[in-house]
Length: 350
Ligand SMILES: *Cc1c(COP(=O)(O)O)cnc(C)c1O
Ligand code: SF4
Image 1: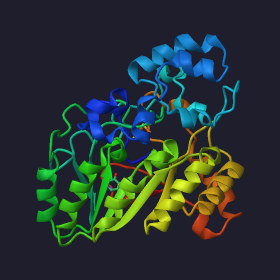
Image 2: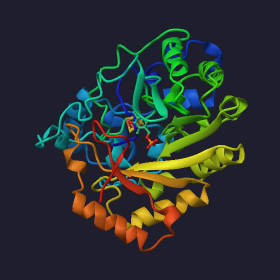
Image 3: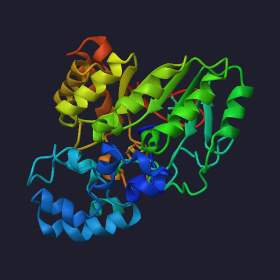
């Protein structure tokens, strides 16, 4: 699906200092997160869009609130309701349309973890749901309906999860996901990384995050320090869907990660009206590469209620990927996959 790990929940951005748990971390990125746009009327005003969109936007935002950092909004074209970045965040009346086969929990994930906050579906790697908070709310996100209120909380909330990881010697890699793990304070992430590094059979620490794309100031010295300080090989999987998302400061943030020794990959979701165009996908891969990032997955949309208007059918998805493969070297062609319950890994769309 999507970012492996979308959500809704106690959005950090809603009250940054409370969520951070300590006042000293009110650094640049955290303040920017606090200043993100949450009011549909403001988004329309800033982008000079028709006020007629407001009623539907407010209605749709009632079930999954609008959230978009100002830096991300600044990359959108004014006056263009079809802007590919705007479509990812603007609540629309279409979200109310019923689509057959679209449900609130398409991956049947709500109850499949061996411990609270742990998903272990694939061999050798397990995923930690670190937080329900994100820095942006993507309308296509498959976790838009999740109730994350029962997420583990409090200091060292991960102790039970770490015990589970320690007890399974087949594990080589831990994925930090959410929500978005990089909405958490660095002190907490550092403590978690240290606890993970103390598990002898683990070799890699992977972070799935949209922050380098939607809030590139998040890639600062504090982040780089804990991410590269342990013996675990760091991998960061960012999430960009359209080349217009890769602004100069985003490219710079990605290069900083890579220069610090982090393997940086990108995953996208194939979205109608956003990136269902071979030229757009080619340009995305090229921009990513120029920023030191390799394309990893292109996810078929999860069939989540409220996102049916983003659907690209499988036949068209394959055609697009073939067109991209005909124009780029193999290492710049993302793998077209879908997440299916009960499989040993992501399923290739063939
Ligand atoms: C997607 C996913 C992973 C990662 O899969 P990779 O193919 O290694 O990228 C791991 N665990 C869960 C539960 C996932 O959904
Ligand atoms: S960043 Fe977007 S796609 Fe990723 S979990 Fe959050 S809402 Fe979902």
